[in-house]
Image (tube, rainbow over all chains, first blue to last red; front, side, top):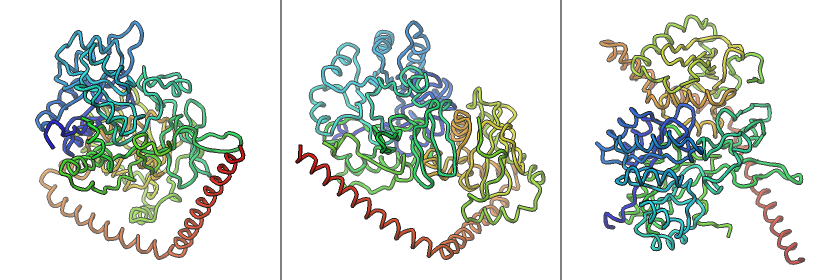
Length: 332
Length: 228
């Protein structure tokens, strides 16, 4: 397989230690965010200050890896300054690409830093050729991170229609099942927005209550799930809440589960995907190291035409379950 | 915040059968204050090596957290202040003193601090129990994971020329701990062998029943469709 077709393994980092774990485990690129509301993982104690980003870029570049900076929330009307500064600083510090979602911010980046490589965040929810071509023609966007709603066949059909725009797809981790960048479920329950404040199910609104029967997870005062003793738990997001209706208790949108496409990597490469993205900037460096090693081995095996390695990632999945999500769309 | 128990005391009833539990039994008669100098020295050595560790706590630096190693007869009061962090050994902690509690086996808490295991995964598997202010817990987890701690290495570096011999003793202790762990696990399995077999049988029967229910539901749906 030629070098042009070699997919890039794009890995998450919430801290400098996680960045080092990702690079050491074989990441081709690491994506991260600043320690503020300019990115969609604005959690307490997470993310990078400017000094840490500078050191992280040096660490990655010395080892042949790239750094992609996610500035993928939507600026508040009238006060875009911190988003503009995030773009300016990321470019000045030598980031290899910016991952952006807001059309105004993309316009600012394209106008102010025409040499910068721009990627369209999954938060922009662009999944059809017309939408993607618009971002490419108008702003010079080079890559689109596809929403997790397309089948492999649909991705294969999309790629030739948007070239030379590259596609990046999620291959492992938390599974957002809503229209990304447009979901307001968490906002309704907490008053804080994933898309503008960078926090889906903000920790300040989450409570876990231990009882004799097990554990209850609450979001914004609403009980959204109860896990019995010994039952695997999941994230406290409304889309994975368990509710009672007509006397039946069940998951309404999605069960606690993690995306895992390790076995599908050859199909995704054949579909013309340029980059494989691992979700989980909020996870620890143990998760980052384990998942990056597994997918490094998977990508290398796929490129060498060898069988996919069987690597058990059960221990780090949400709810102890795995799915191939929409890629196979077995429910159709 | 509220807590289900009026006082945060060591929860030995939830502890797995392990060498740490046996160590906990041996430590039961020891007053927590006697252990304090060891924790002070340990924290000093770690902070010397990672002076910015608690900078990530940001506005949560004044919060206090109860760390409850469930297999040991004491709890730890962690005050992750950016410049003057403290770790105090206590017999118990009043709920009003802390913003949050993190509870789990000692070996798990150490592995978590060293970034050898993922905190979310431990929570999913219920090996780690958290209560109270989730923001404080998340900030503390990220601060410690982000520091890239190597507890044994950090402690040894503080010992200067004594590091070599102490490392030898430490490795020996770790091997011994591992051996005792294996023996304890064998003992645990033999003690509960009958219960495990019964649980396996029940699980198999449950799986059969679930499959049967799913099949019946499918038939009902198919009949419903045919009727309409």
